[in-house]
Length: 315
Image (cartoon, rainbow, N blue to C red; front, side):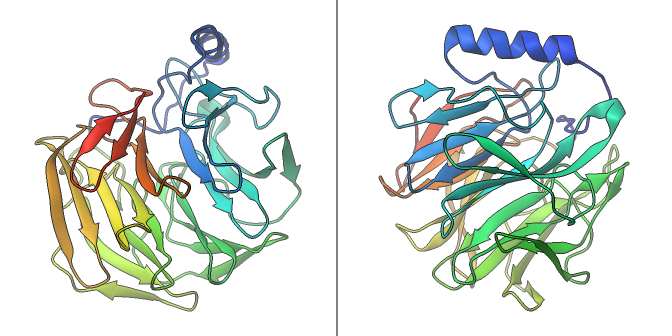
């Protein structure tokens, strides 16, 4: 999908402050590319941070099922394309990395407990953006894979155990960014799909499926949805399947929804939101898959819900 640029090289502090101020007035998150999104299961909140739209976006936003709120203005610096995951065992949101344009990629680790952010002085993954993270509930680890720094894609796997980062693997899927990542809690596997191996115009998207069991990556020989990047993925505990939402490579065609059951991919719908770069989370309280953000030519801050057969606009 070549029409979304997620690694920007423009210093935009004034624009970023303006975007945040406008969002506060509207009481909604700013529409921005590449925001990080996760679901805080202990408080039943969708948590949103960062992104880029005419400047780097900062500030933390939460959706409680009825309204957006901004619980704190302090925290990580405004940034594009960080990654977040919710650590269920420690009741904390983990944020890593992102990009600040002229200042380059970031390599900082932050923890959010629902009240405040705290930066962790930890040696870990190299600085990067447009990577992906999920929480492995069976092993109580946050798993991080891939990303990009200085225009070079990365292919390393790291795990966060609540105290420190450990490099878990250097082999497996080829280096990439803009990929989908989800933890299949039914089978205890982290599932990876697609992305881009080289971030350059006219470079092909990937269409491979991989699984991480905590020891090694395994390539899955399943007929894929087709090459694509900027996809959203999450595990739907209600159906027991990984859900993927996104358009085919190049941003053409409908907004497709696919499911993966550990053996095969199946298309569920081709009438979903036409989005690239949207984030999917599973809302444990209502047992629903939610889609936030992304866009089709311009970013959006819309929130959608998957009913099991189609998508409905929530906010």
